[in-house]
Length: 166
Image (tube, rainbow, N blue to C red; front, side, top):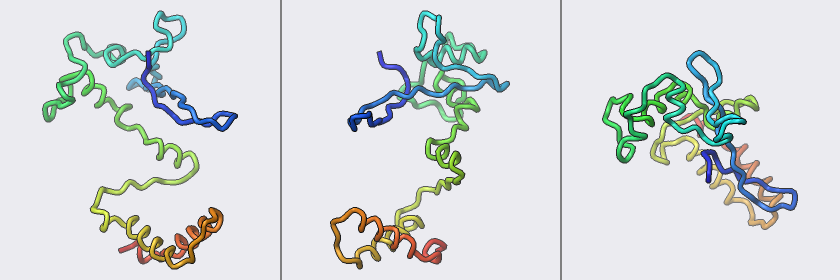
């Protein structure tokens, strides 16, 4: 039986790509104590995901008469406790989770700026890419990866700050 987690592509020692399941990290109770999302060793379901109902019961919610989720995941507007899914979705430790990109960049000392979704012509990063592509096309064609990479770095470095500040 498949457990809840994320499939991550991994390259083994032979260079073969395989999928490795990465389990979800533990959650936190409101008092800051860790709440494991999988049953502990020694439990009859050791290593298996606890499920929404069990997680919410451990947090003190009465979920005996609640559905797992509303039909089609369409909760009524403004509802906060109509189903297990909605209650869990509104828990602070489930709301304030950084994305994998944010976590990785933070670990390396970078900040991630999430831009609002604009039409592509209005998004500054698209303008930068467009400028860089225009410059790249002025270079003579090459088939060597090393030369392509050097050219890409040159054109990206050549994008003027004014292009980014429009």
